Image (tube, rainbow, N blue to C red):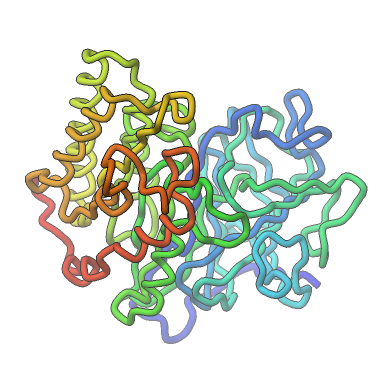
Length: 423
């Protein structure tokens, strides 16, 4: 049975609380290859009369939540008919089944439905819903008319299974029907927020496929930020800090491609998120890897990349937020067939970028040397074989666990008072 919540007063005893993101996904334009398969994708129509059930994994818990739904890249309206949240069966990620008596329907400014204009964002009304730290929540969306376009907003690197079918099944115990499909992909949802004590906050990580979890396991939540969260949850000083993964596979700092350029999304993905107190950049490998292989092009890209880091720092520091960074990890390989980025020339410029990151003159407030942690001690141009997923670019799960374990948790205490906003 669905419980509809029309309004909610601020919960008693929560004076001084504030909203904090507990989960995020970086919105991006869905490439045509990542659109749902027919019949859920037709010419100028996606998800007509469709229900989508998706799982999100929380960082910190709370008793009051609200959801963000994004139409950032839609070219026209996104009509949301109804949305529910519920606990998944066994608390599992990526399952199609929920616990029926936990279902609650969301409202948007008092209405069960909302039409989000192109480039727009919708935030649901707060509801009482107890959700624990590091737990899974099922979000089910019904679109009666679908979105009348093939340009939609999503996050294809979810690493967690979503389910969809025809008809309104927002409160169904299981997503069923002859046309049920599943895919590891988030559609439309971009953040879950909790109403949390003032001491709670969030740590936003801007990155590419290494942070998005390429080569990690589906439905296991074992990307390196997930592994870092597990450590933080066992440490009293950091157990109230959410970890927000604002990364996308193939993303670049300087140019749009698979998602908007990092330099252009800092405001949306860091500064506009609720409760962010710390920020980090671990990105730049795709800028170097995609740059044409000439001295002129790589020099130009490297100079721009360093300037972009400085620009990000200026904007983030203006809000008093400390800005952390990680060095770019190796991508050398025995040959460029195995790893197209592999090149002695590109390696030279990777070293130049990393030299700046390590000694930025205050651009970064603290730096973790992922390069030194993951590189082969016998060949610094390559990943350590123990941590190489096989493509010479992405770490394996042991590598993701290692960099999470080497991340300095003391930074969160050291910079808990923020930083000077004057740059």
